[in-house]
Amino acid sequence: MKTFIARSDSALNKQLRLFCSNIDSVSGLLSINGAKIIQIKKDSVNFDYLLTGAKEFKDYGKSVVASKTQLRMGTDESLLINIIPPQPWPTPVPTNIVPGIQHRFANLIQDCTNSSNFREDIGVLLGIIKPHSIFTPEDGKPNAKGKLAQAGLPEVKATIGKYDGYSIYKDSGDGYKFYDKSAYHKWVDKREPLPHQGTTEVWKYKLIYNYKNEEVGAYSNEIVIVVYGNV
Image (cartoon, rainbow, N blue to C red):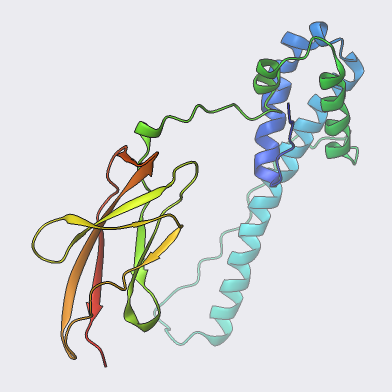
């Protein structure tokens, strides 16, 4: 069982809140030190407080800098600059702010996993183990995207994941028909020549996953690409 600590500040903030909300229900079973639980709960509150303030002041700082630039360099005198004062930080300000939240959280996670009573479902409950998702091929729908690649050729792409690849269906103006297959994330349409110089055409694509030599799941949303004639 592999535990994790969220990387981004916002994700860690959510993880700490989830952990603190559920740790009391399993602390006795896991024999977790009560003082450590009290501290991590303080850590969670402190981190949430500082993270909220950091975002508010960062956004305010950007606004002030933009206003200063507009005040000095702007040319539209009909545009009034409205400077909004920063919102007061919520009170009371925490006084017991101790550095090293992630280090203490990692140690507490280790205490949990060291317990002979620790199970995967407990880790999921605490938010320190990611839930195990069951792969059901029939539920898949490619998250298809498209654009013009080099030389003006259409490029489509979709996440492969546990699938073998995807089938490409194309509509060049006469309805969707099977066109090609790809086992890779990206696929470039090199099969059909581009239109004549100075003209454009609309090519449309839909993708559907392949799994064990069969098409499974739902078709992707339609990809519409305007292609241009050779220069």
